[in-house]
Amino acid sequence: LVQFSFFIMSIARLQPSLGFSSSSSDKMPPTSFLTREDGNKIAYLHYNPPAPHNKGESKNQKPGILFCPGFQSNMHGSKSHTLLSYCISHNYEYTAFDYYGHGQSSPHKCDEYGTIGRWYEDALFILDHAALSNQQIVVGSSMGGWMMLLLAQERSCRVGGLVGIGSAPDFTVQLEKHIQSNATLATQMTENGFADIPTEYDQEGTYRIYRDLLEEAKSHLLLHNANGEQIQRNIDIAKDVPVRLIHGLQDEDIPWQSSLDLSKQLTCQDVELMLIKNGNHRLSSTQHLDRMVYVLDDILRRVHTLES
Image 1 (cartoon, rainbow, N blue to C red):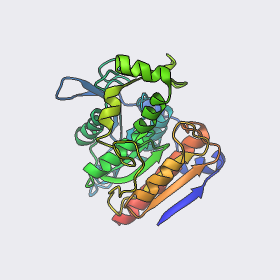
Image 2 (image 1 turned 180 degrees about the vertical axis):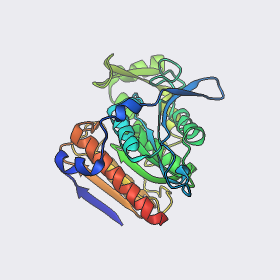
Image 3 (image 1 turned 120 degrees about the vertical axis):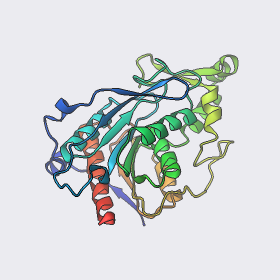
Image 4 (image 1 turned 45 degrees about the vertical axis):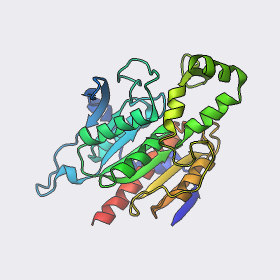
């Protein structure tokens, strides 16, 4: 069952059922670090809820929430803090992290060693070594939507649900085509092995895109082949895993049709695509953040129903 729906809900309708606590910010966990095999450190946040009152219930039996940020984003953005607030209010474990070369993780700035494979390994390392609950609901924003799909394929026994926000699997294909179509960027890539692409999302005004990022990403493509051609193939996710994809119709970075294609190629049965009429790529307004939490709350109810 694949459902396609438009949602335009008022904030007033969403907030009463979510139970946010104004004191949640007082419980912000400190930044912790895990060291990878090469000595680089991954920064992460981990909220471990209090032990349940029912002595017969282990807190690890409740699903945890794992957040995968987007490219050049970090674990301290509005989506991460909103999810943390929800988890504190509802006693769910919460884990978020910074990829190699992002946020507080080392190195200080992303270099040519920052690749899709490297960032996926960071996500896998966090899932294996920081996220304690046996089952995790993975929330992925933009590039994090790519990471969540790779995690669900590699750790199917631990991933119980997926929430993608402006999911951007294979976004490197679009980047490469953009560089090739621009003479200045193409020359810069040929001469230097990188291109500085203008962006409104970075204070410096550009993202430095390395050739190594584009080439290595071809090993992880889901919707395209290595030549950048769109293909139809099954993306194997366990059939009982609920997937919710939220995408803005005004997204100028990753067209909403990408999430439509993704929903068609997922092998799991419970897939819903939610198109937000006034939504852009970031989906970070209060209304959009409430939508994200509403969807997460619904998917947790479904997971609990499947377990009972």
